[in-house]
Image 1 (cartoon, rainbow, N blue to C red):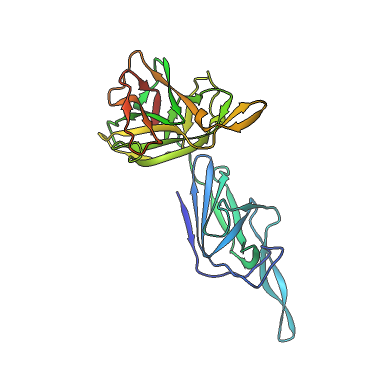
Image 2: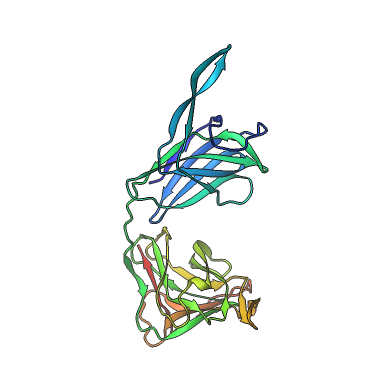
Length: 318
């Protein structure tokens, strides 16, 4: 369950910054936590564009008093907080932003971590720091289960996603569910090529440029099993609600930035971009669509062309 804090106050600095300037202040407007199976995502909004660091600790903040002069008298009345063990984490976004994100490995179930925020505007460290926040991780990961939307037998041939060609297959749920994971058997075409690719889940309808993208994952070919390894690659989290009787398409294609190994070095070679996905050409059995399909995604007028004798090997999990 997500946890959200909202605040409108600008808090005076405690120990948040080593170098301070009175030239800038930050108001921290909201803080939210979204847990997942392996991560906790922290999202913060501020009143002005700035660049933030999250000072994170497994120890609760310590509070001490500081001497302050009031009308010539010294009083130990000013409260300060500090962490004795911590790590500073820079926001994901580059530059100064209004929204700030951190994706941290999930800490163990039923444990708490604490943090506060400090940052800069245009490279100038600000006097403002946030109050301390905490998040108690109560998220319990429930592994997804396979649905009937799958084709995982009689792997016979490969279907190619090349420089000009996207490929994929259609499936149609028989009941409403939320897709949690998509699995494919995809490898680089050969070990002497590497580059980025994308997997998408789209709503069927129109050319390959016009279909609505419901979910996508950007990856790199070297993270896939090597050529000849027919292991499944799992993509999650997906978290897309699917409706019974509606057709959806799994799409795989390369994206610009491919390299080829030549004369002892990696050199640009966009025309050599290629991925292979396992299909079945002997006895396609998925009853509600599928059929490996190709589409020239470099041609804005291209339409999907089905290979009626092949089914894409895939699994959808809920």
